[in-house]
Length: 92
Image (cartoon, rainbow, N blue to C red):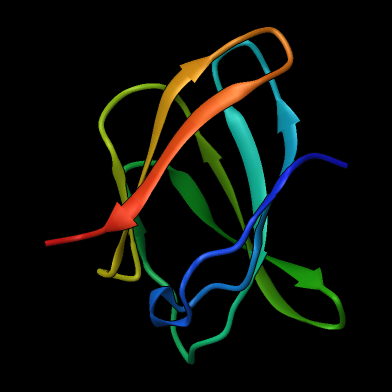
């Protein structure tokens, strides 16, 4: 599959894996490491199975950053034919 980005445990997610890049959206999955999950700013929240545990599926397009678990900002900076540039940083 695609690239995997490891994020700090405080974000409530395990490694984020890029599963597809379409013309205007980056699709990702990640296992949940916390007890809850929230997302604003991109399509997400659908549950998936990831390594036998719970996880989430996200679809984010270029534009404003999404906020995940009130702890992480995820911005799709640019989408190219078969690659995307993501910016992940703590919120606040």
